[in-house]
Length: 178
Image 1: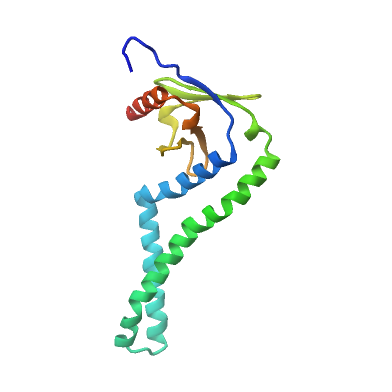
Image 2: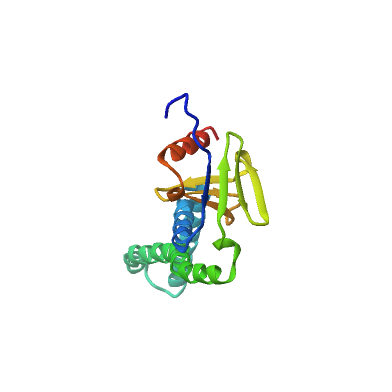
């Protein structure tokens, strides 16, 4: 980007079902980057392992035999935790998204979006918001979109398909400051 040419910081897009599916995927996987999520999952795993050992010890299973079953059970618990935390949201999201597109008329309307050094702004018919970058809880990006999290479960989607390469680079530069 040339220093004497300003980047257009505005775009208009209409979300589609694929944008929403990609957002759900990024949301689901982004939790695994957070320390508190990993700690919670480790705690659930430890409690399940303790319950397994406690139950079979109380039932009279000798320790050498019980020890032989720990690794397979540990793997089953890991698979169960991952299946529940990733599998359920990813499996159900297409159904939820299809239903949302049928019911929520606003999600199918064009969004006019823009940003500056201070905030992200999005506008649809009857809805306008301008949220300062510092007020977002977290921001995630993948090759398809940006997610701006207002809370753990509420986020705004900005698909990269609506942006030029210069706009993507500019937005990444602005976000790097926060």
